[in-house]
Image 1: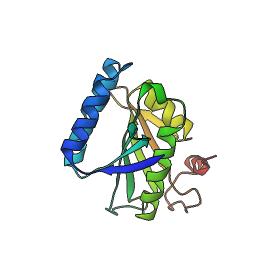
Image 2: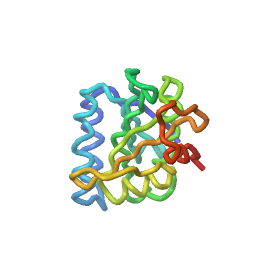
Image 3: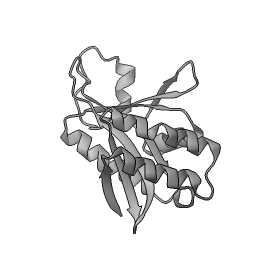
Image 4: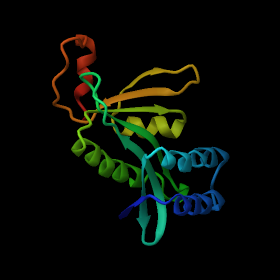
Length: 167
């Protein structure tokens, strides 16, 4: 598996256009991919996994820098998407694990995400990310430790502390 960071918006748009026009793409896939190039403008890291010369999986995450409380900085997870013929083969997970290591190296202690689709929720559950609540829009709120042996801040309720185990 080759992993490449996409920094050029035109390169990303070309790849997204190919994916949107490929076989097996559903309306929901197009909606998910539609937000991807907008995130590049915000300085979010976009990674693509390749099978040979074909881009097959996308990961969009941001390693936060602010430190306003004991949990920060957070890694903000935006999107994981894989070409339908390549799903359930570990492409998105391997790409996520690659980016997760980069975020930990950058000092991130936890990950935040919203899962707005069944596939998104399934992906986070496969990574053992705890789901804390849902938003008014029905998205599931994910807040997970990136480093399982971090110390809990003094104010953390005891009932929450059980969520450090990532196995």
